[in-house]
Length: 401
Image (cartoon, rainbow, N blue to C red; front, side, top):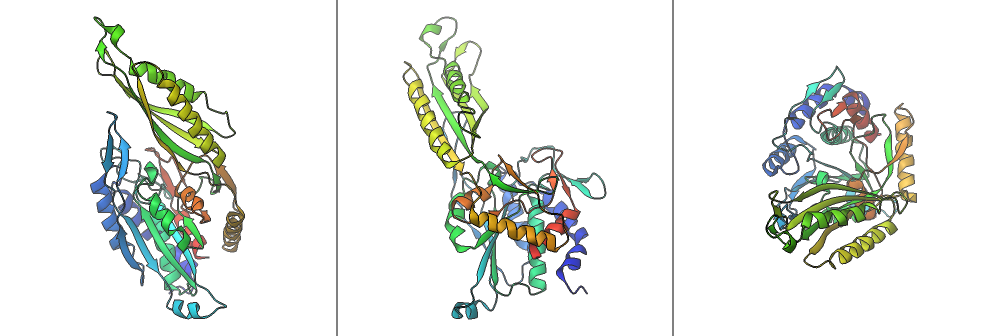
């Protein structure tokens, strides 16, 4: 029998790794609706948080532009939510000197690996490093949440703290369906803890750029490339010119990057293409750049529409606002630093990043949060993804402290 949560958690490292393997071996790619539903059911049965209520929150459909330029509505799996409040909550509400603190713990249960990916199962690289789909990003974080909360509940350490757990199914595609719910619930909490993987060095992310995806649809005029090419309007060529102008915006504001990531168009060599689609990812360092990018894109689209025989339309936008350092954020970072030192861990090294996560959305909604409290890992979004198994215990202990 352990008399404190720290050895209790250490004794559960094997159980943590077994649970992670069982979870990661189930495909939950963002586009695999049946796989996501199966994993959602598995998580509901496995989470086991005594005294917590559970509900599956329905989410709105997400809207996408397909490769034919048509807008499609795709149904979303649910957000999974557990809520727990201490029995003393009623007394706290009546005592003006005390108050119930509310903490949000969140992470996603989708991965980037589709149902037909060859990367479907975990394997050990050595005695401490596990390779597998989503083991770090972010199913390892789900394991950390479960065991940390079980320890807190088992040892009765939540006297005046309540918590909610949110697991969403669409973070890897920008959380198009779950963003509205994040915005709605942010005001319920004092701060948030998100369980994206820590950096391979063990460092945590301090601030993030904002990000968004844009789709450009260009329609021209089809024609026979041999007999009647002059009457055609080549959508691919017109799109190419437009994307080059967009690409020239790179670096025109501090921290601004634009990546032309996907181009689709054409049917045959001897047909002038009448449809072309380009997809662009944008990263911005500050909110003013969001407005600037949208203004520049609108100008370029308007200019492209001046060409006879073409119609250009822009879809999308910045969906994750930048997450800068704020005073509440700094206070929360200091608390995490102190907790880390208290359990004998190394001082935390903070690092800014151009990557985004749901921490961006919650910060924009007014909730300060630390968003890399998952285990150490690397090779994210690749067949080389790995997680350091002892760090599952370390991060669980950090949360408990």
